[in-house]
Structures are given as structure tokens and as C-alpha cells.
Amino acid sequence: MKYLIYYHRKIILLLSVLFLGSSLYAQKSMVTGVVTDSKGSLPGVTIIEKGTKTVSLTDSEGKFTINCSKNGSLAISYLGYETQTVAIEGKTKIEIVLKEKSQNLDEVVVVGYGTVKKRDITGSISSLSAKELEQNQPVNLASALQGKVSGLEIMSSSEPGTSSTFKIRGTSTLTEGGSDPLFIVDGMETNNIDNINPRDMASVEILKDAASAAIYGSKSANGVIIITTKEGNSLKPKVSISYSLKQSQIAHTLAQMNRLEGVRYETLRKYLAGDYSIQNRDSLNPAFTADNFYQELLFRKAYSQQVDASISGAEKKLKYYISAGFLDEQGIQINTYNKWIFRIKTPAFSG
Image 1 (cartoon, helix red, strand yellow):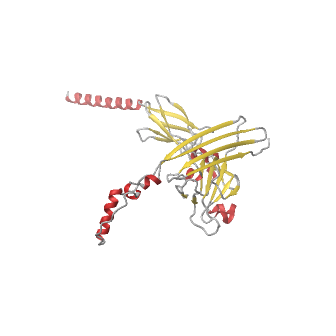
Image 2 (image 1 turned 180 degrees about the horizontal axis):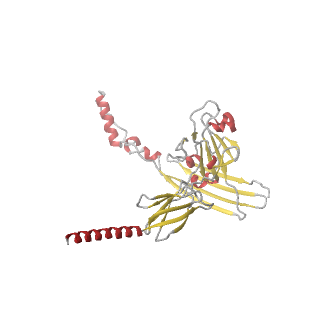
Image 3 (image 1 turned 90 degrees about the vertical axis):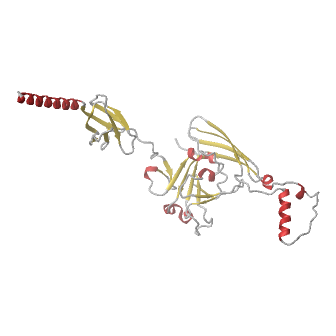
């Protein structure tokens, strides 16, 4: 009797284990699928069941097979593409289309002798688009590039209308311009970039390595800044108007004595120097009767206004871009600078 009870328990335990195993196995399923992009199948894509260590890779035709939970989810990742998460929900076949990450690898960059896609550049080149240049409402090229290009040092004065100094490779003695880089605007060399409105710039490329010497020679010893201005590219005329207003003020002022503190200081200084005489002060002298805070007299809150307008378009054999800009820039130290900028660009093309 004892043996029958013993074997009966063994059989029940064995059946329980088999049932539990079949139940766990029933929660797993074999999922097959294919991973593609806009151009076709993708080999070597990683498929991972989230929360587990189950991993699979796509073959040369983008196909994969993975044993995973019916209610699980798969994470599909591939270099240069956005990672996607797909819920299985009992499906046995799935199709995934990956989207490329927006890395602007096909963006065209001007390199002096022509244009090259950014993915093909091997030299040290920085490129800024019109959108990046206009982010901080610049009034000149220096304020447009400030803090946006590694290795480019810009020294500017707070006085309105003054030119800035650009340094890419430090000071050089090979050029007459000292440490200034070579400026190229629409393929033409120029020494003055203050008359170019940042809102007229389509792109700016900075050539920082010695490879630019193969194009421009020793003139590029301090680097090259290439500016491409906007042009018309639409059959319908496009009108653009912008206005910006800025306020600036001195960040910190120095502590200053008032009239009474000045008199006490002068008396104490003479006393310590051995002069014990009492000096009568002229009661009509403004220096002795008024508190003149010279920092308030010399500095102010400065307001700068900039208005820009442009019209652009294209006809059958002619592109046109016409712009006008007005800048009214006040200095923190009492000084005002005004300038008008006009620009007309009409490159002809065949077609």
C-alpha cells in the first residue's frame, strides 16, 4: 500500500512538471519577419526581445527568425537608422520599415573649387546654414558665427560699427593681413565683410586645415571663410520682411563715492599727510555741491533696431534676389551707428 501511494505521488509530480513546461512553452512562439528601408532590405539589423537576452540578426535579404513571447515586444536597431519598437501581440510574421536618422549627410558644402556632399568631406570644414546663422538675430558676420564654430576665435568691440577680428590658426606672417582669414563671397575675394547682411547669407563654410592652400595658396595660411549669399529659386516672387529689437546694458558698475564721502576722504588724506589746515571750499563749485555719478552719465541702456526686406524669384533664364537692410545700433557708452545695406544678385542660367 505504501509503495502504491509513493508511485502515485511520483506520477502526479511528473505530470505537473510536464504540464508546467508545456504551458511555458506555449507562451513562446517563433516569429519571422523582414526589415527594409526606403531602398530595400537591410542585412545585419539587430532584433532584441525587450526585457530578455534573446537576440537575432537579419540575413543578407533582411529576413530574421526569433523565438520570443507572444505578448512581448521587439526592439529593432541599426546604425544610422531610428530604433523602432514593435509589439508582437500573437503575430508570427512582421514587416518593419526603418527610417534614416536626419543627419544632413547629403547637405551640399562649398569647398572653394566646387560643392561636395557633407558625407564625402575628409578635411576640417565647418558649415553653417542660413537657419543656424539667423538664430541669435545677428547684425554682422561676427555675431552670426560667435560660439558656433570650434577653433574659430572672434574678437569684437562693444563700440557700434567697429570691425571684428577673426582667427582660425592663430597669427601668421605669410600674409599682409596678419592673422585675418581669407574671405570669399560668391567666389570673389574680399577684404571687407561688414557690408554683408547676415540675413542675405545662404551658408558659411570655414576651411580650417592646410588643404585649402591647394586652392588659394599662401593667402589661405590663416584659413578661409566662404560665404554664399541667397538667390531666387522660385518661379513666384517671394517677399520677406523682418524686424528685430535688442536691449543691452552694462552688467556691473563700480562703487563710487558721493559728494560728502569725497570731502571726508580728502580731509583724511591731507590729515594723514601732515596737513592740518582747514580749507574753505567754494560753495558754488558744482564738483563740491552735486553728486555726479559719472557711470550713469557715460553709460546707458542701449537699443538696437534692425529692419530687413527682400524679394526673390526666378524667371525662365534669370534668377533675382534684391534686399535692403537698415541697422540703428546704439552703444552702451553713448554712441550711435547707423547703416544701410542694399544688395542685388541676378545670376543668369540656361534652360
